[in-house]
Length: 128
Image 1: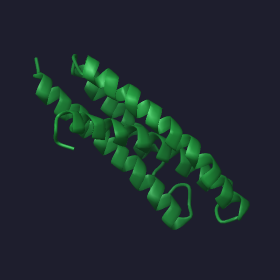
Image 2: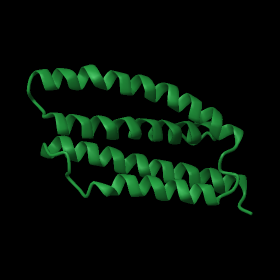
Image 3: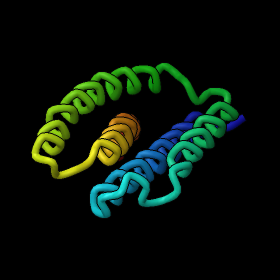
Image 4: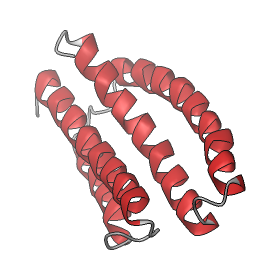
């Protein structure tokens, strides 16, 4: 049975990696002006593999994780809400298309939650 420390490290690692991939995809989409700058299945598969890996680590969902998840979810909600007027303004100025706006907003929403979850996890252990 893995120790609590190794499970916390695994959790921070896989959530951080998934957040990084989502953020990279969103940045590449904005930089290239295309909603598909890399294969579209990469963020989803990375998220599913992360969930599978953490589910196999039987104690990955302890009370510390639940508290961090609540904090990350509430903060990510407001970040996601702020994306709507920001990208609405970009759409109104006709600077980006609807496909690009939806792809970037979706990935930034997921990346914000996962990055905050990782940050809270590391900060709770005095590493962040």
